[in-house]
Length: 337
Image 1 (cartoon, rainbow, N blue to C red):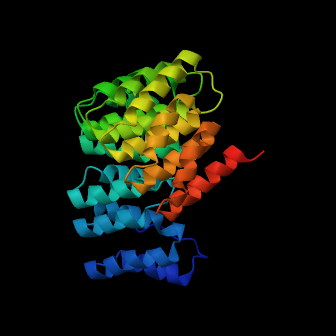
Image 2: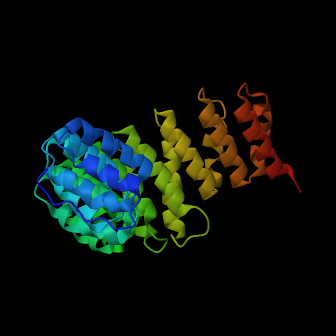
Image 3: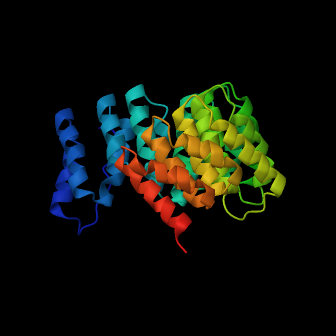
């Protein structure tokens, strides 16, 4: 090994000092076993030694093992070593990218912000993925720029960062992606990210979500149906016309060829308390998919219109016990004083 042995505190436990010596052994097999043993000791005084192995060990397999050993440590030098390893051989960079997703501290994670603008797509995407749930404000600028990246994977990661940051200035480009990106998974992710909009910003994104309900990819339609329910549920300031348009789009989605889309639409219609949806929801009580019948029953109970009682009473004999339970609860809501 060619890097300096980090000095240990005089009070360091003997087993920790012994493990450090094994980590720096000239025998690669000994180093490998020592890296695995670190998971049992987890003494932070060894972090510089393991970061040094990640940077300088001659064997890619051991560098990858060092990256895995460093996962979950919110330490500045560890983050820097893992970020540098994103430029290493495939096995090492994959291990480093996965380790970075376990960061929990935004201050340590902020060190990844410069890497979010890296020319290499893998490095850029890995940095954005690690930053996603850390909500580092400085990540907004590179994430916004990455929405125009040629690599769809990078665009997906950028969408995730902006969704968690809940920034109003990101809503317009996210809405554009939800209806116009060439990659279906990017459109799906963008539709989901719009659900993190504040109630004040919700009216601006509803048209894009209604449009996404007619997307060619069923997963995009499913996500749009879910997000609409989040934004228009309850007494929020989206306006009567916006709520009516959302309800109409969701009712139309109840004819979707995929039951998964119908299920999410039924759930959102219930949250919207859309009385105009009674017909499509009672019809859904007869659908072959038990999950959809269950959601239709729940939605009818949430809407609270007693004209749905006869259809629900007929569904009390449903062969699926989960559906029968949902029907029973819905009837209790409708017929209780």
